[in-house]
Image (cartoon, rainbow, N blue to C red; front, side, top):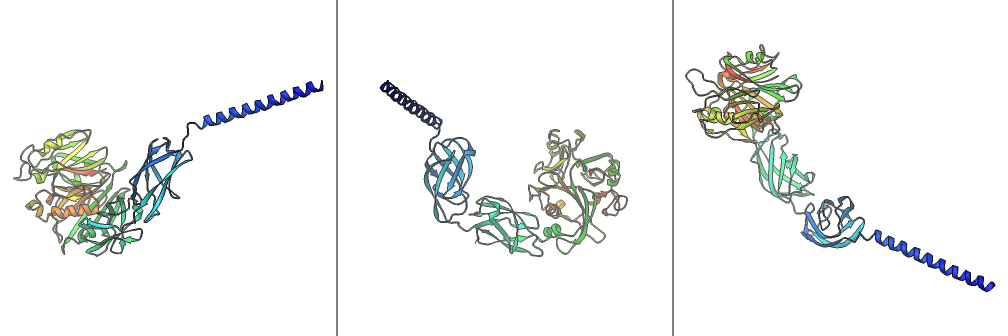
Length: 468
């Protein structure tokens, strides 16, 4: 009996051990199955195999996965910025912190490490300048071309002499910089410093007159938030005294830009009051005395109120248009030859501009002064002038009136263009001038008349641009 029990115990032990062995085997198989979808990532190539910090490096291979959040790349001990991930290709930005040395690149996919492949860092070459914008003034945009800049804006220190500018855009070959206030300087040497290495210097001229406009201590009146009237009388464009009036308008729910029109000519002040305006200026040309063929195309709130002359109109009077769409302004060049430019404006869909008025000449095009036939007597005469400019986003408008007579002298179209550009206009146009030049600001001046019209008397005009 005792032998039987011993035998049964032996059989039971054997069965128990077999059960545990089978169970452990099953668990190991399950564990292996759970990891079967994971395989170590493998790097097969880097492209390029050498470069500078900031270069985009393409890593090809297998097993990277497609979940960017589970992929990390290290250049030696420095983690890099991952740009994009597929299972066979990763784009990464070579990190900073290396110079003239080799970094071991490794991929971690779901924490699994790959093999390593070397990336050779080329030494940080000093920036080199090849060209700069010819002239600058305070707050103007200067473009610097060259090589070995950093694509990270903060790495590039741009100085105008000893004064630092503000870098707004950066690539390895181009920097866009806002010029600082250079005071009375007429020129400055521009240099770029990157990681302590200084470039060669290129000289840039300072437009003294534009700098004066940009930095002038204007007499300022705030009609209401976003609607500011500025005025100043000072020597400008040489030793001549000029009197400049500015409406600086931020378009928003409180400040709406509009075009006014009257079939029976009326003074700018009268028309502004009729439209309930807070401020405004005279606008388009119109036949006066023996002159003909000056009527511009005008559209107000989607309706054409004046077709304008459709043939024979001088390009100087009709190659630009003010467009207003959803209270955003733009100034557009219609062409470079005259005759039928009013028809070009009329063909602009209402969906692009509910309000349009044609005039000219165009003064500033995409940040560059560009006046058709600049040597034409119409452009060269120093007279009272009215102009309007807009910022790139169309949400800020500058209206300018320059007086003549009574101890001050007017301006040429180029000088008006420089004034509007110095104020911040990306695009700008000329309006009717001479005796028509008038600016209105409610509750200022004489019944709203803030400038002194040529001849001392307001001329009746046919159109205005106003803010209400």
